[in-house]
Image (cartoon, rainbow, N blue to C red):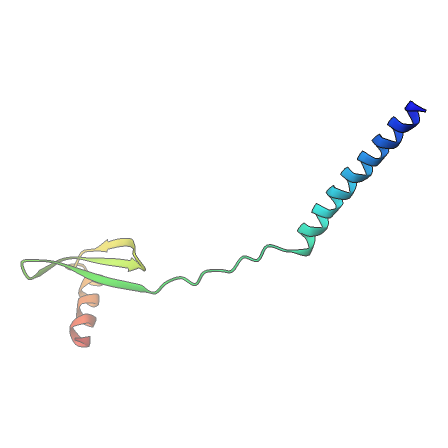
Length: 87
């Protein structure tokens, strides 16, 4: 008698464990993880001035500093020219 009770209890535990595992699998399959691609922020430029002269141009994406551009370089002159005509 006791053996039958133990076997019945073990069988019940196996069914419960299997059901729990199946439920986790179904839940994971039913609710896919949605990854929303973040839109990259616009690139902006900031002039670094010292005593009225531009000493550097910072290329920024949001609050992240991407690179520093020399204002004497060709690219730096183009950027400064755009800002001078816009202002």
